[in-house]
Amino acid sequence: MIRHIVMWKLKDAADAPDFKARLDTCRQLVPGMHAFEVAIRTPGLEANCDVVLYSEFENSAALAAYQDHPHHQLISSGLGALRDTRTVLDYEVQPSKETTHDCQQAPFHSTAV
Image (cartoon, rainbow, N blue to C red; front, side):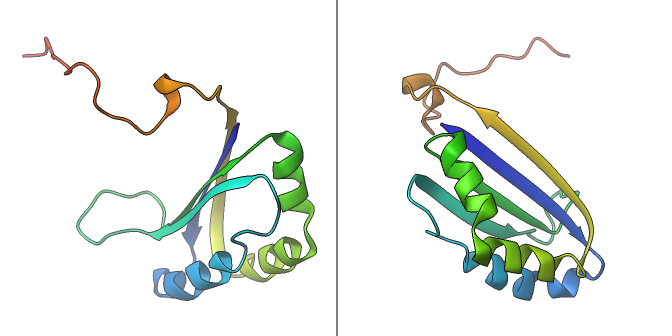
């Protein structure tokens, strides 16, 4: 499984709702897309970006199909004028109990004072 995370800092944070709405049209473009979530920063919470995309793909071929899809290309080119910076991290994970979104692990014990 490939996780595709993209973060954008916008030229004007007021454009975030429109930016998100445009990105949301890319949901379910290709087979093999297992997750797709677009979020806008929450006022009062720490953030270095205005908009984030979290997505999961079955494999690198599914991610490539998404990135090459004509609708994705059209949306990406239109969003370019609104953004100041774009940061991407794609990484591979092996599906297992350890990589699910289950946070019910042993409690963390800090030794910091």
